[in-house]
Image (cartoon, rainbow, N blue to C red; front, side, top):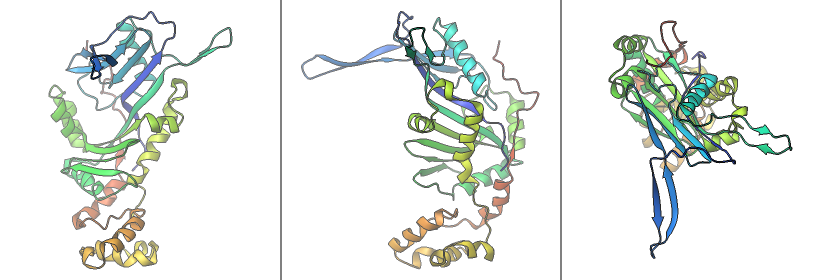
Amino acid sequence: MSHGAVFIDWITVSQFHPQGGLPVLVAGVTVWYDAFGNARFERARAASIGGSYDTAVRVQCDGFRVYLSGNVGRFARQDNLFNHGWAGTLRQCNRILLGLGLPPFTNSFRAADGTETRGAVVSRIDLTANYAAGNESRARAVIRWLTARSISRMKRGHHGDDSVWFVNSRRMVKAYIKHLEMVAHGASCDEFVVDWARGQGVVRVEVEMRKRSLSEEGLQDLHAVSDEKLAELFFAETDVLRAVDFDDGPDFLASLPVRSRAYAAAWMGGQDVHALASRATLWRHARVLREYGLNIMEARCLSAFPVRVRVIDLVALERPDWYDLSEAA
């Protein structure tokens, strides 16, 4: 899988303005009461700001803190087959805020008296890239192949042969056939764009980075984020989906740990390994073999393995010249 352009499909960002006095923008307030009828906790709900083509982002301001969450690059556009990088996404965020009479997101700054005011804080970023499998059939084969993969300490799920995801409390990694998602969720999409995505066999790979992961990567503060850092993070997080280039040959088997080799060979041959050993023994070897891209606890789909070459050789898609990132008029 070659590297391509990484762009942003979702951002959640907020900034506290200690001076206050900002316009209040909420969709309502939820109040929790105790058994005696005393208000104990209240929380404002973000307002949904709508755009053309049934797009929307969520914005909130309580007079001090400004909050925005959504796919700002998709806002007022027919589709998000391609989207903005970091600078373009931030521009879109600030354009929306300024249109609502709210201040734009800024970096941290130091005042003349030496005090430092923290700038905007990012709590979620969805990074994504497009890859061409060649046609829809090959794209489905790619997804089927990925459903046989596993990522350590992440729960896997899939929907037929059009999407697969791996998730834990820190992040989500997912892949899906883009034109099918566009048809399902964007009835107003340009038919030419949908047909182009179908003809290319576009597989969208996404990484949803949540607050904890962004903090661990040092990417919560606005000034710390850059396209280079986001691209590096994206490819590191998705490397596990393409890290093991293996086949059924003796060289691959010889590279496996000796004690687990027999179970791997049986599984690759289509045998039911559950008949070979106890469940505890199989789980022990399964943990070892997952590091080599094998999941012996699930029945092997023999027809999926030829797809390995397609997965490894997926072509990274750059945004074509005809694709317009500007908003609708």
